[in-house]
Image 1 (spheres, rainbow, N blue to C red):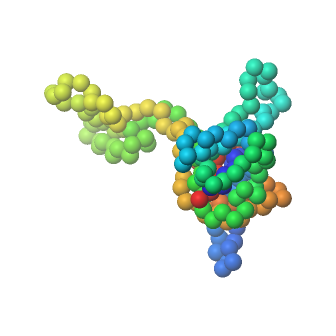
Image 2: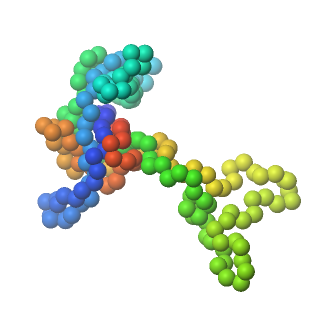
Length: 191
C-alpha cells in the first residue's frame, strides 16, 4: 500500500486522450520522512511519518506533526526514508482522507434535508424542526436529528482515479473532489 501526505491546491479541468474534459483535484505532495516503523502484530504494521513545521510557528516544546499509515507486512520502510510523489507513481486508485469544510451552526433543512412547512395562512412553521418527542418516552430520544454544527469532521473519499502524477513538481491530479478547503493537509492512500 503506497501513501503520501499532501496539501489541497484546488480544482481544475484537464482533457483525457479522447478529448473529454475531466474535473480534477490538484494535490501538492508535502515532503516527509519516516520517523518510526511499528509492528503491532504479524499481520498489522504501520509507518509513522514526520512533517517539519513552519518556521514561524515552531515552538521548542511542541514536536513536529506526525501521521500514521497502515502498510502491508511485506513492505519495507526505513527510518529517515523520504516520502514523496514517487510513492504513488504506478497507483491507479486512491482513498483520500482529511477534514471536511466546516459549515458552522445550521438548521435541520440544510443539515438533514428536512422539508419546510407551509409559508402562508398564518403558519409559523417555515424552517423549524417540528416535533422532537411524544407522550412516550417523555424525553428526547438519543440520536434525534436536530440543528447543530455541520461539517468540520474527518472524512474519507474512496476509489478516486489518479489522473496524473508529476514527480518533478510533486503534484498529483485526482479525478473528482477531495475533502477539505484549499491548503488543508490530506492523506492520500493507494490501493
